[in-house]
Length: 361
Image (cartoon, rainbow, N blue to C red):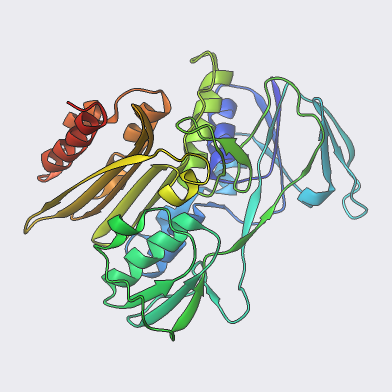
């Protein structure tokens, strides 16, 4: 197949790698001049929580020289896509019509931005202190609380969160203070112009809307982790390994040195605008090794949201597996026997109890 990828991000990079290794002709059009970076991990690299080199998903050298992918530098705003055809209208590059492709994957690219007096979480190195968190990225707002908590600081925010307030009470959030360094989670999303993509083509990128499979409500994709899963699934479909792409729930995930959270589906504030008769169930576990709070939101026997906040267990060890199971409408807790951390059985027990509560067992 001839494949065009418009916009380079962790998800489209994963897709490009799979298809190029299988011998397909892949062309990538991108504004970026650098290697592919998991932007969500930049704050962790600056705090030495992870190795800085690990935030690079693939180098351009690997994509071009090893895999043979053609990478062209263009302004994404100059790219037009319509029913299998790609056109670049750019007075600088003057590529003209790029041709017709069997598959076109449309990806957005992200640029961190400062907002007024606020410093970008993607550019600032955090230190112990007090912060006012401001921004539209609910998952990054929540993760910023975790990072600041681990540094010994505190924070307030009036911005949206990826976890409900009754779960976030485990974190030292000072709701009365009014001063502090302003920290922004906002960023710019750059997209190509899209006409009609045609059957079989897909968008993978921040800022695109998907429909949440749990509630049926539209949401905007914000997490690089979700992009990576989408890229892998799309590659598996186009390689003929799976037949179709499942509808995905919203995923928000974040971690620091000690804390981690996972939110699948929408929060109560988002759901109550649509549903009136919501129910919820919450359980907690506390020991010298770990603190855990888990919550589900449901309507009748229909699960709408799962939220987990933990200290002492790294959710990234299993987030993709639990997410994939919910995405495929199976019961999440069944896979948790695969856990290898000492307190993992306690977390499994919490989720089992929540599921039993859901079915009134």
